[in-house]
Image (cartoon, rainbow, N blue to C red; front, side, top):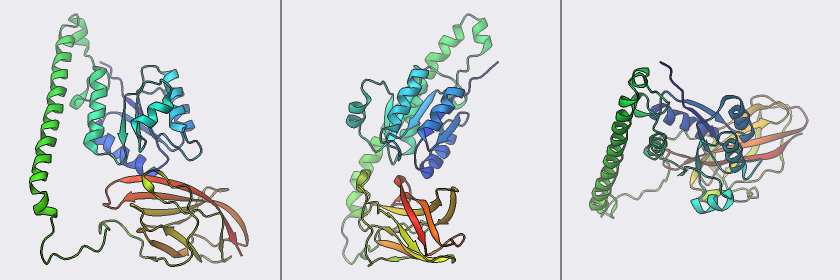
Length: 330
């Protein structure tokens, strides 16, 4: 008895999002193969060599604004039956306008909830009439069923469909009941109360904050074009630092008003070497005193400042950015 392993490809610029997806997929479809890529071209090369059953992809990539669209179209040409889900902050209208007729299976908006991802994958597998352990992915039709003329196979398909429908109905009922319960208790939980202490901080204390970050009142770097969800990303055309020392000064800023934490990673382009990585920085704060992994001798060093983001409740990654700069050591 043979079993086909469901191949899932996930492409996103944010490594934190790729890691979160790996954890969620391992719980939802534990026997599937998940392959993660930060570059759409690398994902396409893998698909050409190994095949693809499900593609999960962001729309926008740093080097290609519509890189996710091009990846989806290319894989669809290779494998017309592939299932495509966009995991993105783009809405359905924007995606449909750009797709020019490409058929896709759905959209999961960031930040996603695991039950939303689970429901989307279950719907895909149900439409394809796939069977496997725990009711998820992979063609697993027993040889005994085939020997009996498919009688049990057809009967099993009906049972699988009813089970999935029942699960979806239960989930919907739970969501409705939960919404009613929250609505009835909203004022008790979140309404104004006399003598209630004022909440002064929006930070989740469970987030690993960088102890070197402080309130920033210096000159602010010029913002790049704001990303989705209104996240302001500072621009760094060049940064001048002291040569031949690990302890240098710069302004790694999370602009005030941002809806998320920032984490900074500085990578030298020529060697792909990480020379600095911070912990999370709150909106309105900056890291000024930076300890590099190694001192840089006098000269100019092209680098990328990788900015990862995390929602203020500490639960969900959001869109980040890679900012190109030049470190000038003097």
